[in-house]
View (cartoon, rainbow, N blue to C red):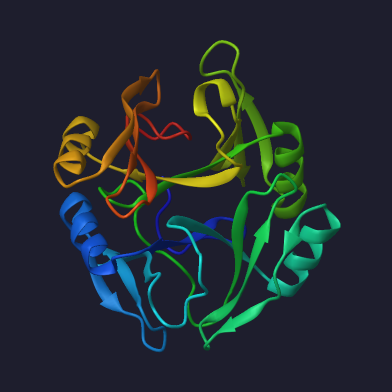
Length: 266
């Protein structure tokens, strides 16, 4: 599991972008026990707290500083030493990137996309070093994975960009799941999109939140108005997981770990 301030090239932040922010805060607060703290200087944004630890931010899509037409989603952020250099490398590897900008004096960031179109962000820390929550705690961002249209192209891109080592696994017959490892520790994964099962879903990054009981959490989420997109299912040796969509349209996974990908028991 991951605890404390994240290392360079680890996932260091999430931005949960949502309409109806007040209702979203209530939904996730009830579901995961999140509490919130204002982010000075960022209208419509609040820190997400799991216990007393920072787990990311909840951003109000209706805030006046938000660009129009942003859909509800969870943005994932990877820590880098130099955001400008990271953006240059993204484009040299066949991805795309928006210009780097400063987030007050907290750090520098940029929106990027891999060659298949999955969006992610890079973060160069200044005052804000990112999340420090225990990734095993109930309600904490716990795992990150990209579903992609070209698995080999995506995994090669991220290996070259962040120095992640690749380890292919076959959790079910006929499917390859690639682990991304940083200093021998898994930090995320990738799998091929399967239109016959997933429909017309574009390449993207998804976030899984750790829960103590997947069945109870899924039941509560539905009671609170969420949609159960993939029912609670068992993945041998990993745990129980489900895909949900919040009442405000934010897709997210929950996972009750049997063991973390690095073998740490739950």
